[in-house]
Image (cartoon, rainbow, N blue to C red; front, side, top):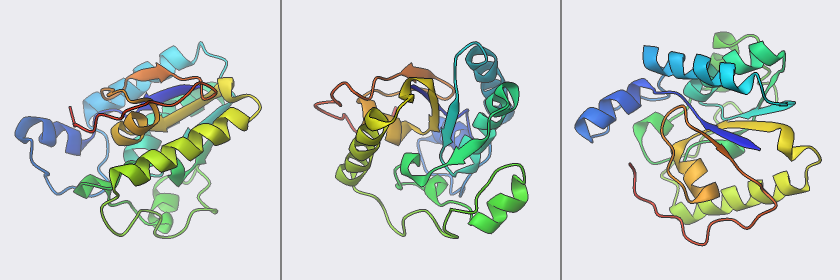
Length: 185
């Protein structure tokens, strides 16, 4: 499967400059983030992708839409691949708001409030990533799946830190990381 970290968000831009939480809930992409999403869609348009799994955060949906449109595929929204809840950007948007904002995406299965109520311990995110790995390994056609996710979830799943818009190929049948180095880039 291919993992894609969402493009640069308003939060990423400010956090990179100050190293402090700027207090932006569920941020959208910056112009650079939109360019990263278009670039990813161009690259992914040459792949045999048949399924797109996406975190419910707006930045992930905005990143996935150009690829979905290019390939003519629907987005499957799944909170399992959401970011680790640790910063203001990890407060999500309610299902009804997302449905109004992205009418082309099906949110019917999503709970109104789908993000956790408090900070998520690293071990919990690692457990969620491990379950996702096992589910994907058991899924027929995992090699044709794109997952649009976040730094923390990708770190928990692979042990690797990826930048905004970066892609990473992962074989979910291989063992997960022995150690997850939880240090934000």
